[in-house]
Image (cartoon, rainbow, N blue to C red; front, side, top):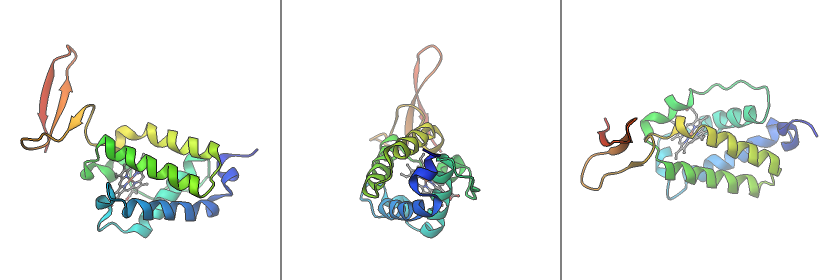
Length: 147
Ligand code: HEM
């Protein structure tokens, strides 16, 4: 059967899939704005390295740590979910084997906490600045102001 990256046809076969994925991210009506001004060719390289490694390829990842790369974008849960859906659709359209799709989606899901900005039940408060609800050890709720 081989490793997942072998089932996909190797890193070279995954390259056009990730290029298409990044193109779909960048033109998406919901999350495309995040990618304005981002060097997309560079992003394809890093996304490819990252995904290939997740599938067992022994390639180097040359991008930044995920939290560092995403923090300033203040990504919410729903926006994270939108990326997941675009990834799913892209992998399906390129006939990537199901086991590899599942592995990539699950791998991304485990990284949700590193990529999203709002811990727990985040929201954009309608009356003003960004706030997020926190709950302490005793179950008391509080509103946090974010920088
Ligand atoms: C687990 C899910 C995700 C993974 C594995 C992932 C992977 C990556 C990687 C490898 C990079 C390159 C890092 C670098 O520039 O050094 C990157 C950058 C970026 N990602 Fe993600 N990403 C994820 C989720 C998201 C989501 C949900 C969004 C937006 C909705 C997003 C938007 C961006 C943007 C805008 C950049 C460029 C950062 C910059 O140069 O400012 N990512 N991501």
